[in-house]
Image (cartoon, rainbow, N blue to C red; front, side):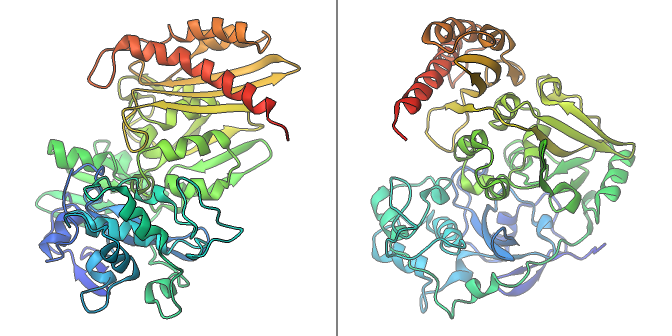
Length: 485
């Protein structure tokens, strides 16, 4: 293992020597004099800290992936390659993204602009995005430009002090990268391989194991070690609550946790695959997850966040559990003793507690096949995107000959744990799929869980939204059935 970590930044190798393991990439970069990336929220919500990281691609060997530098430990990038806004261009030779933002009035006050630049650059280099000329492959809509630019790429960059239009205009004006673009050419080569790291400063240690077996040995020897993957939750604890761990074990690049398999009876999703990777690799195979992904935080977060991390925190308001509960998912836990599969409905035991033992890792999430025919994911929050849910509901039903044969409904935000709405499922199964049945079941659903009053919503509002969610599902399904093929 390397004990002298370093990171390639804007083409130069920069050592991490003497940097405490809890130091974020943002703080480290600013300490190196690269002050374009800034701290706005310190929890991955504003995007002012966005940088580009060379990561394995799904369509090309390397993809330039935008991440929140305020959340990722600098030590986690040992051996990796990153580009900041300073590395994209300068005053003598602006990058196309920088040029369009400047000339179209999208540069705002300037504080958040470097973050916008990096998020837009990641979308600029996305394989297959298209050009500034509309064609049959890229039809403009409310969230996509004629050049194929996906505005969700900017959902994690929240500053809008010049308004939305100039930023959107800049995004939609971007053409394809030119043949002499070095970062575009870089995509055809492999990204840096993960580097096994053991790095200690000031009594704290950061470890990136070489493989799964070594990771499990570490956890068996030190059950108190903090396991991180995308660090989208742990990074917040470090920044806002001053959390420090004696040992941090990074598992995000372990090959054994990054497999995605589609079999005849099950889909297996590696726990360390980012949500963005899962979305692309599934390519629409799981419509319920497709409905959930855009509502899960922002693209910046989804580029780092993993299902293993989302389930590992045990949060009752995580967005993934309601959808996975509706999909009847199981969690595969692994330790030195081997693997064991636990139905997700039995995984949560209390507020932020689960059946996972200290020496276990989440290896994968399994979805049984075939999938339900009627699915939906409803998230109620104060913002449409990039917000914490007040209530989240995942629906998965099979209706055969007008009768509900199977129902799975997952709930989040209405109890100390995510949970299945078992009473509502029972009120649906075996009954006709009619408005009368749905209205009766909606009354049952409104009574599920133990919702509470807090700053996001009242208990009565949460209960009302549960019932409305089932009514909405029925209305949307009936409307879809009435649309001519």
